[in-house]
Length: 97
Image (cartoon, rainbow, N blue to C red; front, side, top):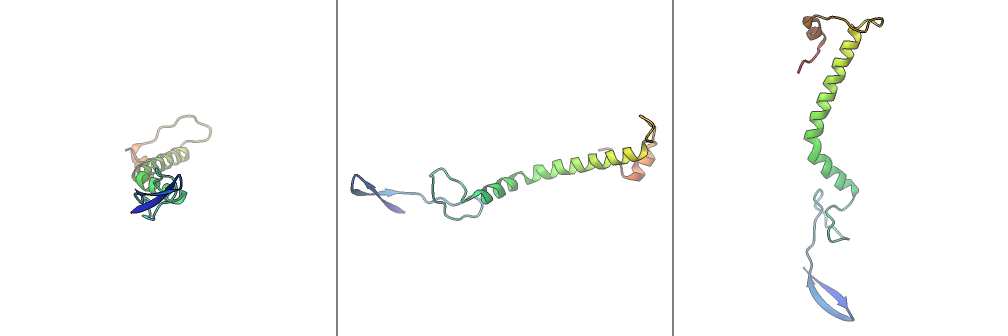
């Protein structure tokens, strides 16, 4: 696409590349190094890139929280330590991985 640029009162044709948003593919206006049309597209694009890593971390945190709750229910409030058989932990859903 050609754009006419006014330099010192003289119109000169220059070649301009029209960029599209990396997320929604709309035309971008503004700075030449812009990649996204707005903050929503920037956030959505980056969240999409990191979603698999976030899911893995979320699953690990959920498993740790569940294990912690199970151990808290098995520990009497007056004791600091207790022995529990592995079958009891498995029955309650404790995850060893």
